[in-house]
Image (cartoon, rainbow, N blue to C red; front, side):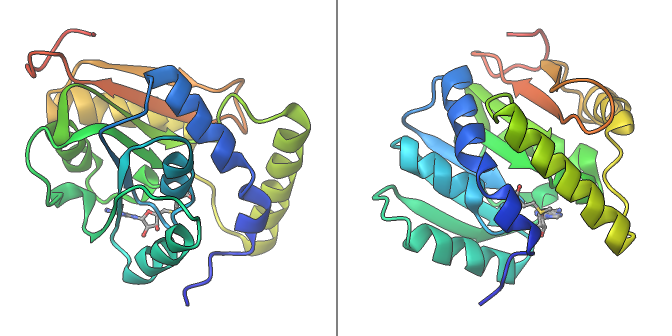
Amino acid sequence: MHRPSVFYSILEPIYPFLVQQFADDYGLNRGIAVDIGTGPGFLGTELAKITNMTVCFVDLNEEALQSAKERFMVSETDNEALFVRADVKALPFEDGFADFVMSRGSIWFWEEPEKGLSEVYRILKPGGVAVIGGGLGRYVPDSMRRRIVAANRDRLIRSGETRPCFKDFSRMIEDALLEKAGVDSFRMISEGEEGDSGKWVEIHKNGDGKRGGLS
Ligand SMILES: C[S@@+](CC[C@H](N)C(=O)[O-])C[C@H]1O[C@@H](n2cnc3c(N)ncnc32)[C@H](O)[C@@H]1O
């Protein structure tokens, strides 16, 4: 079995908070949700636990997808689920397939973010919403946030790995969405101050399915 990194044992408690935030913000209960770059499947599985949505777990990596499947299978939810190996730049879903698309911690790895974002927009139903980015969400208690941020900082120092550059996120999104994907119905969300805060982009598809104009 594919084992998620040790850091997930520290990160795991944030996923129920994050999906609760999404469910509250977007009134999620029924329809189709897609979790892109699902990794070990925490986000999709937690969303299934609190909604009646069909959840599509999508990842490039077969092992990650297998791990997501195993996690979902033991979660004792009765929601329908699909496990799809795909690159976000060519999603095997029809236009208007999804009511909700979420993606956490993945866009920094996409080779061509503008293609991925364009695909996300294409598969959204008119009236649908997508939330893409990274961070812990607003509902995580402060003490947990401080502990996770500190643990992540230590982990990065020890491993020499570089963290995603949140500062460049807005520029990258605006460039990819506005200039290249031609999508202008979006808003940037910042979780807090500079530094360890998360950044997200929320993309709306208008009810008429046409590009343009914030809904
Ligand atoms: C850091 S993990 C995040 C996992 C999960 N979303 C979470 O928050 O726990 C990033 C995931 O994105 C996936 N990924 C990277 N590039 C991708 C792409 N172009 N299309 C689909 N998935 C991709 C990776 O395989 C990996 O599982």
